[in-house]
Image (cartoon, rainbow, N blue to C red; front, side, top):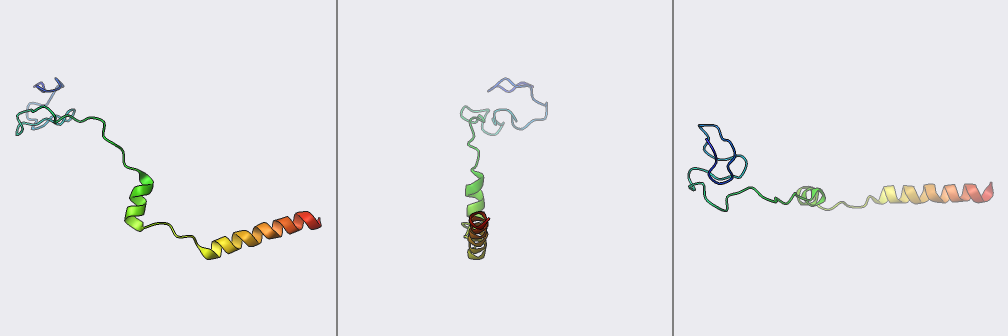
Length: 77
């Protein structure tokens, strides 16, 4: 069987076209095609699921201490 909308080859028992999305119920109608889907933004999905990332104050303090220790070691060396 051939899809009357996009002319893709279909299985004889197909109820919809996997290429364009047209189906028997809509009469293989125009406007059912699969086109230019926008891919979701990963960061937006993570934010929606888990909320915004919060800065860890202990990690920030540790990074500052390590940076100051490194600077002190460079100056005193």
